[in-house]
Image 1: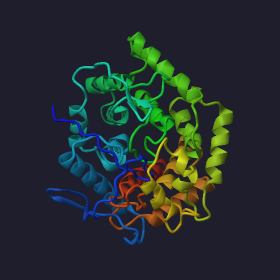
Image 2: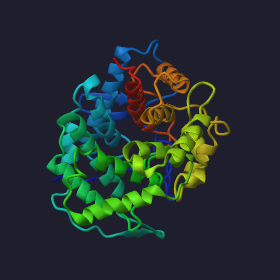
Image 3: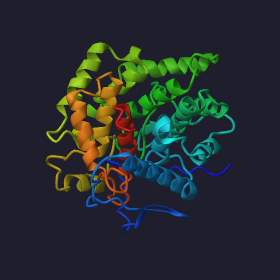
Image 4: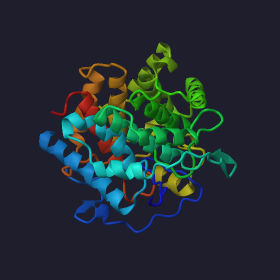
Length: 378
């Protein structure tokens, strides 16, 4: 088994007091033999028209990025391979089968044996090592099983069991260290993805005979019913929880979350990730470097619409049974279609170091998901 590298970057905002200064600007976002993907930039030309060819370009960008990461880094992360395997399998009917090389990489890092994991303490913050990695790995494997094979595999079952070895006593999956925004920035966000993983795995929950594991699932559900909400992103993300575990979110809370989400839409039809939280409420600690980067952006006082939050807002509304014809969704779709770049991707400014702009990859995954849920990909 090859070693697992736990490398984290940040897409919208990253946090950690010891965040180092940025390295020299790289030439490529992704690079491996036969693949060279340029660094995303704000001035990359936009597509003249969103169509089948631009969708194909977006799909190729996702494939190239994930393959490059697997071949050069070989770690399950929250900015490239994690989003690829958590979102790409659902697009199989529209874009073809996802790349099995990515699946194989995930399978290879599933522990051969499930063993207890010791809780760690960093600066007074208790967490379980690799909790975020186990969640993203399990979610990706569960999504593959759901959309490609139709049955839960042995390695997915093992991955989910290992994931629960990293569950905190509260029932949550705790975020720690440098993280991707909005991926695993708050305990609620990471715990929702864990809930998504166990519900995506075909028949996994209903087939469980392990009473200890069933008790851990109930503990997760209990925590998700009334978590400590950090920001508006967590508040609207309850809509995603309601989609996967509807019994945990009362109708009144769903209505409140939808109202909040709608209130955040910009006049141009888009949404902004930075509107969803104050800086201090994204994570339990963040560096001065990242804070300065964000506050000194030209649009810091009034953040512009971005591709990730616009796409996610559409996804959340569609998962809440809002029809694609809804005026809010249509305005969001129009924004996404005109913002795609000729490379196929959707540009988004990194709020971590401003070098690789991995949020562009995550945003492209979400944009394709949003458009597919609105029958805009033919």
